[in-house]
Image 1: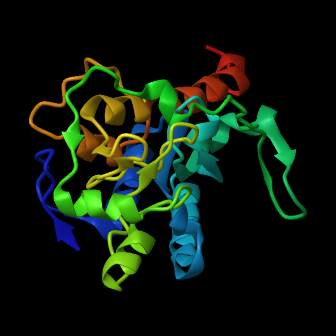
Image 2: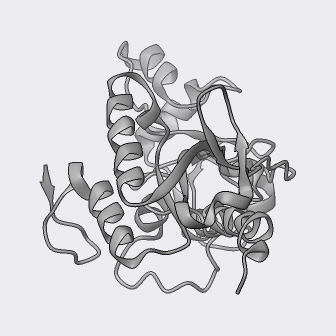
Image 3: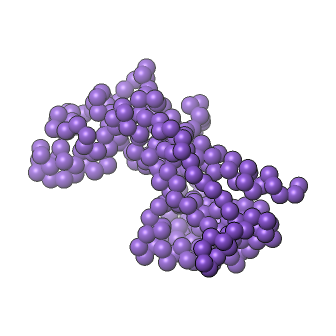
Length: 246
């Protein structure tokens, strides 16, 4: 489907955007390509698209592999799982090839991140003006039971309907949920919404980042966390690029 983006792009057909990216890489021929998408791309019928993606990478001259990585294991204070496609140009792959399974040889790359989790308390915005809850939200929070992940059960107990799935509950000792563009997370012990600075920290963006006219939660929800990107790029440099001839 076509969509206009807040960032200012012209209309795009989202279903072909990934392949447009590969077409561009085919023309530019970088040594390595990194592409990211939602974890669901590997599940159900969507997996048929993955086969087309792999074929497109192959036709462009690359050997591609995919990993499901979680930002919370990479020094990002956010529980964000994404699939990453990482491809090396075929003419460079020879020295790195290993037998992945019975049928395929791929460039060896280990992406086993084990950073200590950063819980919400570590990114707490102590001094900022708080976005307090409305009377309706306050009533729902009184119905909330410790440990519940969102307001759906509290809503059902109060009005008999499951609703407010999107209102995730943040606990001091837990990692933030995945930031999404229309995020309205609520801090359990303070009965308030998450602040802009907490969004920024959860996304691992610099606190002085200029979001221009965009709301931080929108851009962060649409982006790969910078620290997540840096961790992957660092391993690609150490394991691949640093070993290639200049």
